[in-house]
Length: 228
Image 1 (spheres, rainbow, N blue to C red):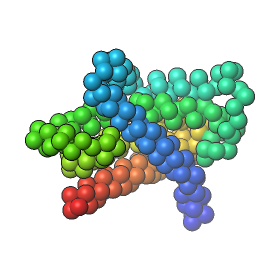
Image 2: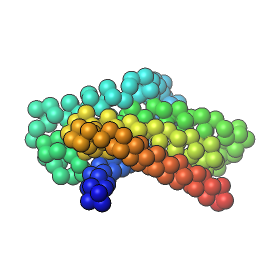
Image 3: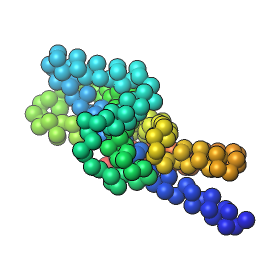
C-alpha cells in the first residue's frame, strides 16, 4: 500500500515542475506584453494606440485553448524544423520542444489583454494631482513607470495575482500536446489505473495549493510595498 502511495505521489513530481515552468515563463511574458500595450496606448501616437487596442481585444476575445492549439501547431510547422530546442523545457516529449516554446507565447498572449486592462484600471486610481506632480519632475520613462507602479500597487497587485491564478488554470491546455503537466498526469493516471477519484482529487489539490501560493505571494508583496 505504501509503495502504491509513493508511486502515486511520484507520478506528479515532474508534472508539477512542468506546470510551474509553463506558468512562470508565460506569466512573466504576459506581464511584459501587457506593459507594452499600456505604454503604446498612452504614447500619444494614434497608430500605436490602435495596435494596442487591437491586440488587447484579440487577446481577451479568443479562448485560450485556440491560442494554444494555434501556436503549438505553428511550432510543429516544417518551416521551423531546423530549430533545435529539445531538452530545454521539462516534461516535453522529444520533437515538441519548439512547439512547447510557441505554446508558452500563446499562453502569455491569452492573458496579456486582461492584464493590460487591470493595469489601466489600477493607473486610473492615481489622483490627478499626483500625475500632474510627476509631470513637473520631468522624469525619464523608466523612473516614471516605476513611480506609477508604486502609486497604484495596492490596487494593482491583488487583481493581477487573481488573474494569474486563472492563468495557472490555463496551463491545463498544454496537455493537448505530449507535455507532462499536472492535468496530463491526472489523465494518464486515470486511464492506466481507472482510479478516477484519487487522481482527480490530488490534481485539484495541487492546483488549489499553487493558486493559493500565487494569491498569498501577491498579498505579501502588496503589504510590503505599502510599508515602503
